[in-house]
Length: 146
Image (cartoon, rainbow, N blue to C red; front, side, top):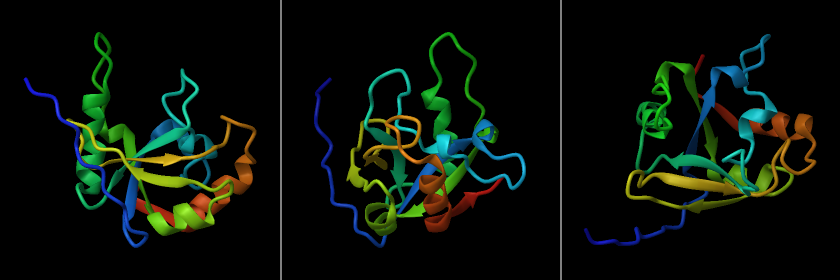
């Protein structure tokens, strides 16, 4: 098997990112994402990125369904129906969020659409959860709603 590095591309500001939101990360009252839905991942390590998918290479349904490939060995398969898709404009992610975030295309062999939102997030690094969440809600919308 030959190893190769997938080409990283610049993601233009007018494009969109999709982020999976598990049903446990929704508020009870309005079924909108909690601030914790946008934590850097993986949670077990000192990560500085939030995974997302670039709309150039995927759709909301493909993004949601790809959660199956993120299931851990020996554990039950993750159910795509437990996830919803939040859509955000790249330019607004880069320019409107506080603290500021960087958007990078970080494709892998399994996911050409993979992108990372790099920067401090709520619950990771003493970021104001309420302010961060209110801006995320303002700049995004459901692509697949609860």
